Image 1: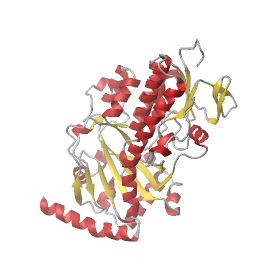
Image 2: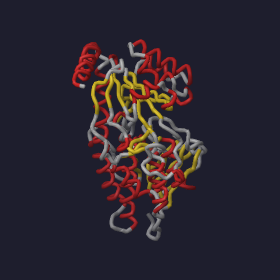
Image 3: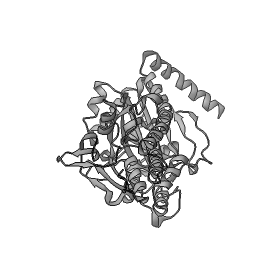
Image 4: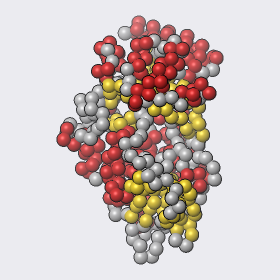
Amino acid sequence: MGANDERLRVIVVGGGIGGLALAAGLRRHDFEVVVFDRDHDVAATGGYHITLDGRAQLALQQLIEPDLYERLLASSSALRLRDPDVFWDRRGRLLGQGRDLGSDPSIDIDRITLRLLLADAAGNSLKLGHTVTEVAPSSGSGPSVTLADGVRHTAELIVGADGAHSVVARHLAGGPTNQPAGLIGFSGRTPSPALDEIEQLRLGPRSSMTIGPRGAALYVGFLDPVGRAVLDAPELRSAITTGPTYIWGAMFPESSQTNRLRKLAGTALRDALLHRFRGHRWTEQVLQVIERTDPGSIAAFRFNAASSKPQDLAPWPAGPITALGDAVHATPPTAGMGAGAAIRDAADLLRQLRAVRAKDKTLSVAINDYETTLRARGSEVLTLAMKTVRWILATDTPIGAAATAVVTPILGTVRRLRS
């Protein structure tokens, strides 16, 4: 930062949740910021809905204006208004349930809605259709990025928020910062009224997980930002989800067979997923949420994961190029904490940059302090997410498959007898 420059120019590479959250916070606190994102449409994103715990919400309140935060709450579904999560076997038999959610401050919001709201906060700092192809270290004018059109941009700080395949993090680490976790996910959206009454009653206003033999798993999340809104203010609602909806995620171990499914789309992909589950002897009742989904909503994605060891995360010396979110601690969605962690990264980085502007710290000290916290947070969320991944993969072994097939009916019987 120049001696007379109080604003500190920041380039953010990537306009996902973390990058937009950081840009919103920097813009709110009068930093000069630009976000380069390769997408041409902010709404062009898929995946599960997002859960934001109390820590992620506090971070968001530091990053966005109060009126926008109210719009977010009016567009979110409250966990405290939901029934406890449940666990099923592949035949739809109840195995157990999670903790009571009555005092849980967490909220659910679909990814598209959150990204649109954060894009509003980022305003004209967001530059869509701009792909960063190269990152260069500091020169006389600071570090720089080069876009696909050959134009080079410099800043005092560059932040990689460009996901698991981050160009920025790869530049810093000298290679990939994560690897495939061993699962491929497929997600879609099914309005609750599309299901028959029996299945609506079975699934209920709650999220659930079903894990069967051979690594076949199905998560069904419940989202209702209208009937179970965090803030009952219809005039502020921006949610693209307009009624009770199940947002499901099917998971299979990565293999040549699973990878072939990723080449399909729409009805062909839906039918192939159903065929795969049926081959593992899942009942039609459990599969109804996939069978009656909107085929156009189905997306496929690989689960990537960084190391859960803090010392392996951000393994570079602190300097004027850093990163956040999945660029550092790529996290499978199995803990529902990845986006929240990226938002908390953004709030921590903003706090450190404000200390730089106040001349309480140098930029290098601030980035070092930020990355120290980043490593601990990344380790926490990865440890939780990988527990479920390992559980699913364990059922894909001969012993694991047999144990799952034998034990789950017993658990279901015990559950029914206790009831």
